[in-house]
Picture 1 (cartoon, rainbow, N blue to C red):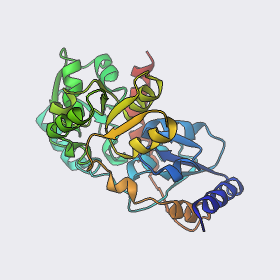
Picture 2: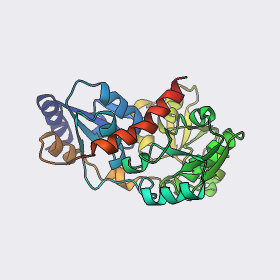
Picture 3: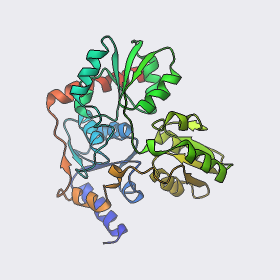
Picture 4: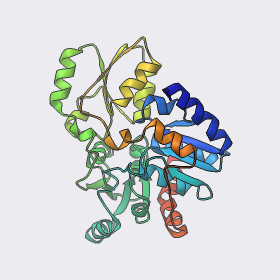
Length: 306
């Protein structure tokens, strides 16, 4: 089958099987084109919770599918490729977290949304990369342990100096591959380009950026800006997506090595197999896990809406 033929078959089958397809923006362009909702992990899960379909297909990684299940417990949630995990989400388990809490009594636990459902059950609040600064500022507690990404945590800590924030040694291996050397080389090669960087990057890289924001914020700025050249400091799939959206602008990857291998494992044939109800893995979470993991998410929504 050609790409177009496969896409057409996916579009036909998802309607007949009452499936809502979610695709994180790090997925390939051919997958984004058949998705009902695309964006950052939490945003697409929120959208799916409001969708009428009874079945959700997550084209992303496992913690994203778990988040979709937490927000839509009555729906069947399928992870398109069962091997798609997230190294950052798996860096801390509940036993590790309990030790962290024991060593930091009185501290609130703020968890990046890029964590497992099990880990969320032991946290006080979740944050996204776009909402982290706002949520941490509005938390009633002054003493906070931020998990698991020390790079995002460092960025938040600098923006919210009035809080006493402790970090753990964890983070995104994809964004951590980007170095200051990459910044200098790309600045020299493209002196007129605007540097847009994700806060999961190393602090020394973040300091060099013209703009720091979530993947969606980076994409929105690039689309809306009057500038015509951009250096993209996040997963290189975004370079491709922006080239499709803005063919009159130029986009350059900050690092040639910035690709999430777990995101790349999902393919269009995987999506076709899943909408045929022959592939993927259904996400099963206990009622207790869903109830407890929902609490820090609800707290995030409460603090973010005030």
